[in-house]
Length: 190
Image 1: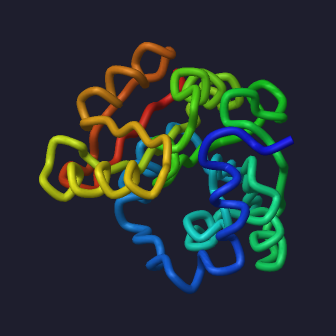
Image 2 (image 1 turned 135 degrees about the vertical axis):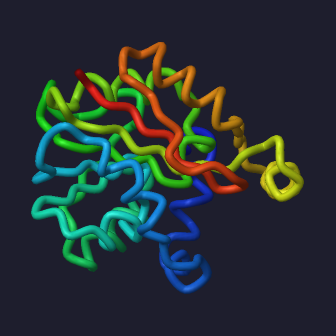
């Protein structure tokens, strides 16, 4: 059985991903993480692929959840904890992590609302969800969305305000610490 949506493409691309993608810029991720109301000891990188975003963080326990086994194999080779799973059905206990990252990945998730709700479920009180995405209302965002469709991705992009509203709807206190083509939305669990 073929994996759904964009998963099969990422699975095939896994061994080349690190060579072709730029390193994660930790500054915009940290801008969201600092909003947490608790110390961060355990972070879950949802749709984290090879773990390039979470590897840049000095958090003791870093776990990548991804639906593409090839991407997880690459993350495991880099020393990260890995769990095969769907962002909308996280195989993680309720209130068990301090932070959830979804970096450059939410637009590839089929059930975006489910993924945000699952992030809220697994966060401990005071924990934070940090989403890094691309603003479809900018010219680079429009070009990126068009390019991803042309290569066959099922991507759907947000504006910062749309994503902040979606984060609020699942019960988190949303903020937009970074705006622009690449933006950050954070949601804190109270």
